Length: 443
Image (tube, rainbow, N blue to C red; front, top):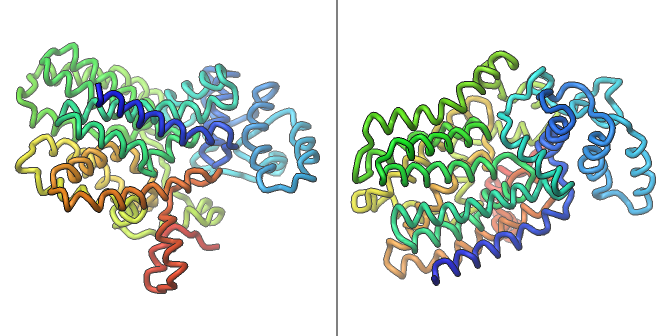
């Protein structure tokens, strides 16, 4: 009873902190893209592309929630009436081009990636966003992410309790509720919060299937992972963690279970990959930053130039509480369940690092699929060390929560070590300022 009361309190705090997002404008680049696609699906359900204009009421909704919101943010109040009049005069919207620049073909997004006859992301988030905007209007976009984040908190509690005990479940739930990467994803009209939710749900379903030994339960777990894949393709990166779960389970799955799980994934993903190959021209999108992006966006140049170790050092600078993952790794020999989040997180981080240094760039929000695993490891690290070693977790957790302030800034695309950046500015340590520069684009 006390555990459920604490979980409700954690959920309440997380949702309370997200409430400003329901009133804020959402005009970051990906938010604009997904809002356009949601309105496109509402207007033409089978026209899954960014090409061509939105018209009528769909265009008006898109313009008001993105372009107009961006223009009004920071503008002088005396100019608001003129700005509104200019945007309200538009009767169509083409997201690929800058507002009022469609005739001149002034691209707002990389044409190599976006100006295609088929949108490369799977449809589950777009369709979910379209439904939420249909039901709740403008607030539906951020509300979807908020609800997905809240569901992730509850699911991670269930997973931690199933793998270890209630203490691990509660602490992991609190960490995923308040660590800045998952929180930021839940604060934006982005795809990542829903992806994170479905991934944790897949692990909960897989652990349950391993305990029952039923092929039907394994097929259900495969379907849930397939839903994660239909949200965003990096869901495939958690497969090593699921394999680890099978290997450390008290009862290894038989071939019937394995085939049922694979079939559950395939029944959803194979048709989608076939459609993508047919319409987009490739099974996987070529989403590496092009020269066009490098020239037009200083932020892209910055993330492409980050060092290979950024996912480790950047994460610890933004959320130093994750240093407690280290003592958890020391306990691998004693607690076999720790192999599941270890392989889960390591697999995601390793692949993302290789892709990042190969030219895609390194952004902390890409770590969303790994964050629940890291929260489980950090929770174990805090609880499995002696009490005097766990006491600093309070201070490190407080510093981690300071990074949540970045999530409250409309248009911000990444959490930053605000406490570190403020401190270095005060003390003026030139050598250490290079660390903060990893979050400050030039040009």
